Amino acid sequence: MRLLSVASEVFPLVKTGGLADVAGALPRALSEYGVETRTLLPGYPAVLAALSDAEPALRIGDLFGGSATVLTAAVDGLQTLVIDAPHLYSRPGGIYGWPDDAIRFAALARVAADIGMGALPGFLPDIVHSHDWQTGLTPAYLRYDGRRAPGTVMTVHNLAFQGQFPPNLLGVLGLPASAYTMEGVEYYGEISFLKAGLQLADRITTVSPTYAAEIQSPALGMGMDGLLRHRAAVFSGILNGIDTEVWNPQTDTAIVETFSVDELGGRPANKAGLQEHFDLPVEPSLPLFGIITRLSWQKGVDLITAAVPDLIALGAQLVVLGAGDFDQEVAVGGLRDRYSETVAVRIGYDEALAHLIQAGADAIVVPSRFEPCGLTQLCALRYGAIPVVARTGGLVDTVIDASPVALAAGVATGVQFAAGSVEMVAAALRRTVGLHADRTAWRQMQANAMHTDVSWRDPARRYATLYRGLLR
Ligand code: ADP
Ligand code: GLC
Image (cartoon, rainbow, N blue to C red):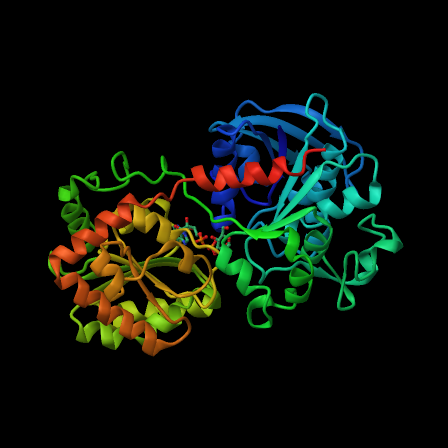
């Protein structure tokens, strides 16, 4: 089976969030199930610079106002197709937030649809799988063109980003007037790329079963719940995995000492290394919490900052690695000066430091207000850092709360708390510190966590089954 996967970011070439991790890791896992994947993405400067053996595979005379070349290149075992279109992607700075984003990402979808219809010599996909709003027009172009119809799958990684644009762009985007209806790309008087994908793809998925249920209700549906309920028969939630080679405490070169579930002896050295790195008192016995996150309202880091006095009362430490919204960076950064004995902060994006935090922290806190899947808690499980997570979305599906019953049955892997309030975060920190003091219970939880299968094996099998159901 041949699959064209389409995404606006793909690890290790370009990443702003978990979408890139998924787009980068899923194809490798799919190959185990007989799915041959090519991954289409925009040729931002960093992407083009990272390609070593790129070959031109397709020339496009006019792609929304300029010529383009689709390059093919292998990157870390990933077969990529990169759109080299300088008028769209050759810009310094961020990959999102340009005034012409509608055109930049419509171009990505347009090329995907053309490849879906056979434009690329030697690669005729059976299935085209698009991720998030940036690629949402792919099923629309395929539907309204109608020359050839590969199966289409649309995955929503975060319903908060929908790609809404003014209706007068319809013609510019190359969509027919007939597309501008409730059954097409129209959404409350605008064009919505995500809605187009959710409406027109053969199958839709999101990244956890709980989030799939949550977004069919008005509370978390962000205006799309009606449509999702309407399409419930073709809508499902498939959990993400993580790349267990990139995230492997037995071989990790970014940490102080490697370790495994049977040989946890390396963990204390990582804890000390982490405390040292952050200039915190090097105290082996103090519970050390870690946070690795984008700083945005979704992630709820403001709830933790409000709970710092509780943390101090508990005699615990906290390290935060995060980047994102300016006001949150300022607020979180300020903690460092006020509570330098307890809280350490690094504002920025740092892949290696994320590994050290996973290896050295006793627990990883994920206080999200909503969370489609979440990857940091999966990395935490793999590294024996106990995940302390808000009870929402994929966090529910991946962490087993240390309830009395779960503890007695010996199956707990973490701590869950009701999402969205400072009091609940504080209570969860207290409960975690209590558990940490019970060395036997804690060891058992670490072992359970590290034995959890967080790999792509099961999710990839589910995607492969989904694709197979669409073969014509
Ligand atoms: P989201 O995609 O919503 O940001 P996920 O949990 O799905 O959340 O994925 C985030 C990914 O990015 C994880 O792999 C996490 O480790 C990583 N990450 C987030 N913030 C940082 C940071 N400041 N430095 C390094 N890695 C980060
Ligand atoms: C989004 C979500 C996150 C999910 C990631 C990958 O960024 O916020 O929960 O893990 O996509 O699917």
